[in-house]
Amino acid sequence: MRRLDLRKAQAARLNTIRDINRQIVLNYVREREPISRAEISRETALQRSTISAIVEDLKTEGLVEEVGEGESTGGRRPTLLKLRAAGPIALGVSITPTCTTIATSDLAGRVIDQEEFLTDADKTLNQVINVLRDFTTRYKGSIEGVGVSLPGLVDPSTGTALYIPYFLWRDLPISEMISNAVGLPVVIDNDANAVALAELWFGRPEVNDARDFILVLVAEGVGTGIIFDGQVYRGQRGAAGEFGHMVIGSGAPVPCSCGSDDCWEAFSSERAAIARYVKLSGASNKVTFIEVVDRALGGEADAKAALVETARQLGVGISNLIIGFSPEAVVVGGEIARAWDLIESALTETIANSVRRGLPSARILPSTLGEKPTLRGALSLVLASKFAAAFAA
Image 1 (cartoon, rainbow, N blue to C red):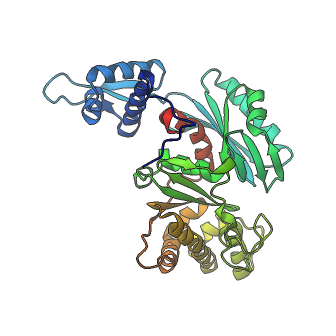
Image 2: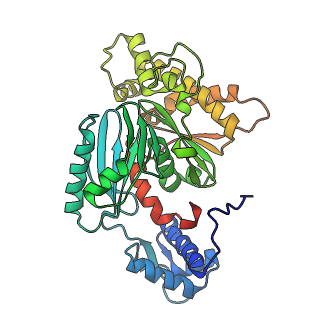
Image 3: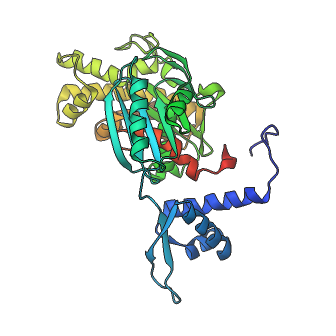
């Protein structure tokens, strides 16, 4: 039972009830499309007149459209509804240590237009602003907001990048800088939080049906996004989830972004897997993690061994998260999810051996968001606000 926070509490008014019903109807359309007004009424026990009024409002706002008729159950054939996803509504910016991707998407999260370039700590923000200006000019009037995912400590409430270690950015007012330049509202978040949000709204049913799960993002570093009761848990100033700096050993194959050799990130990141592969195979240290995964999937023993050991170390940290939080599921995201068939046994065996008998474990699942999860996360920062009830903040 959640305690009422009197600092944020507001009496329920007619508009509040109407907003709740509106979000219920919109989400039924999103998850069950194509669906009829009558079916929504049966599922929700809302009156048909209420459903019809809400649907008309959603059609006027350009969120829902009619797409033909369904099968008759004895009377008139019902008119079916679906999300109106004809054009771009959101802009997403994914900034990673190696590359930056900017894309537009429709209401359903489908990418319409995309541009990518190498990340440069000194030039990237100006490049981002220039590309966003091009997109907003191209799709004038249709874009409603910009979402930005960043690999570091972020305060979404102020739109400030507190510390991005890869670029040595400190206390940068990212939201304000971009918003002033392009004239749109801007939401920023840590990359793992953004991907967790994307899993909540656009992931597989086993994940988005869970009220509590943890997203572990394996990239140049390791980050976690925590979903409690169907929403992202951020903690004070957005600092929750920095488990990449959890100490799990010593003498890691690479230093953590903080400089230590005992952090989970130093044992379990893409950089750690590359270092293991280089040591085993004698390959050039310029090899990329994508290449390591490709070689492992192609049957190369050294690449497979590097990924399996990385998965074992990943499992050590995930075990600690399960013991501490007891989530319904843990989702592993990033390029490593592409090698799931190769690493699943090592990962789950490590977790099974570490979570003590009698304690509940969790389902361990690979992300299904595709090859650019942080981009999906950035877009979700805008799209989720269309589907999430305002009262659930």
